[in-house]
Length: 435
Ligand code: MEV
Image (cartoon, rainbow, N blue to C red; front, side, top):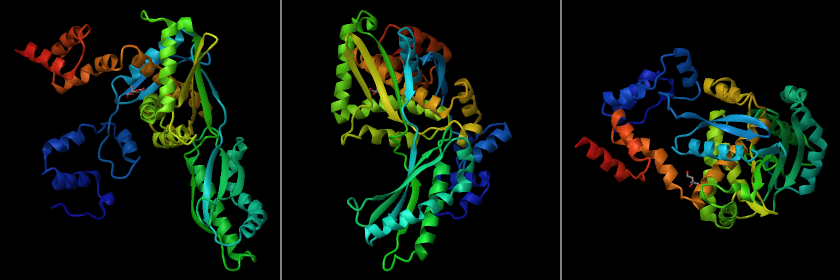
C-alpha cells in the first residue's frame, strides 16, 4: 500500500516522478513517457513553467486559438481563446462574422471599483465600535500609505473604508468594507496587502483603546471579494429585425424565437445555468488566454446572475420598434499588468494581439466574447439545433479516438460534409473503409 510522504515538495522533479511511478503506476515506463513528452526542450521556458506552481511535473497543453473579425467599438480584433471544447472558437468566429456584417459590437465599462472586507467579531456595544472606528479611521488609512503610494501616483488606491454592522446576519459580526480602484491591475495582491495592514493597525489600536473594557474587536480574516458588482461592463449588438434574415429564415421569426429563448433562460434555473455556461465558454477562453483568473471571474459572474434572489440569464434581448437588441452586463475584475501578464509568453502574445489593452479595454472584449458565444449558441438552438455544428467540429476528436490515418481522415471529412456526424456513424464509416 502507498505510504504517506513527507518533504515531497523539496525533492527534485525526477525524484518526485520516480516516487509517483513507484507508488501509483507500477514503475510504468509508458506513464513516465507521458509526462516527459510534454517537457519543453527550452530549459528556461520549462523552468518558468515549473516555477508557476509547487510540485510541477510536466506541462498540460490546451489549444490556443483565435477568433477573428470582432468589430468592437469600431476596431477590428482577433480574440485569443484557450479552450478544449471543439466548437467554441468556430462559434465565436461565426458570431463575429454575423455581427461584422450588421455593425459590430458596442461595449462600455460602467464602473471599475473593486472591494475587500476585514471581517470582525465584536460582542460589545455597537456605538463603542463605531466611535473607535471614527477615531482611528485616519490612522488606518495612513498605515497603508507606503503600500498604495505607487497606485495613488497612477490615480488609483483605496477609495473608501466603512464600518458595517452585520449583526443582523450573524451575532457579533461586523465588517470593514473597503473599496479600491486598481487601474490596469486585477489588484488581488494589492487589495489583500492593504486589508491585512489595516487589520493589524486596527487590532493594535484596539489593544489600547480606553473604551473597550470587557470586549475588544477581533479580526477574523481579511480578504478581497471576488463579487464585484461595482466593476461592471456592458456589451451589446443591435440591428433592424429584417437584417437578421439568413439561411431562409425571416428576421422576424428568428428575432421572436431568439427573444423567447432568452426569456426562458431568464425565468428557469435549469436553462439559465446551461445558457450562462455557454456564455462562460467565450469568457473563460479569453480570460485564460490573457492570463487572468477564471475562477474569480466564474464565482463573481454566477453570483451576479443571482443578484435578484434567483439564478437567471446574464444576457438580455428585446425587440423594440423593429430593432433587435441583445446585450450582456457582467462584473469582471481583470488585469493587463502584473500576474502572468509579463511572465507567460503566450499571455504576452495574446495581449499584443489585442493591442496591449487596458484592463477596461479587456473587460469590454471579454464581455463581447461572452455575448458572441451566447448569440452563436442560441442562434443554433432556435434554428438547426446545437448538435449539427457541434458534431461537425467534434468529428476530428472521434477520428483521433479510432486512430484514423490522415488518408482516412480526409475521406471522412468529405463524407461527413453531407452526412450527420455521430460516434457510431464515424466508427461504421472507418470500419467500412478498413475492410
Ligand atoms: C455547450 O458548451 C454550451 C451550450 O449548451 C450553451 C447553451 O445551451 O446555450 C450550447
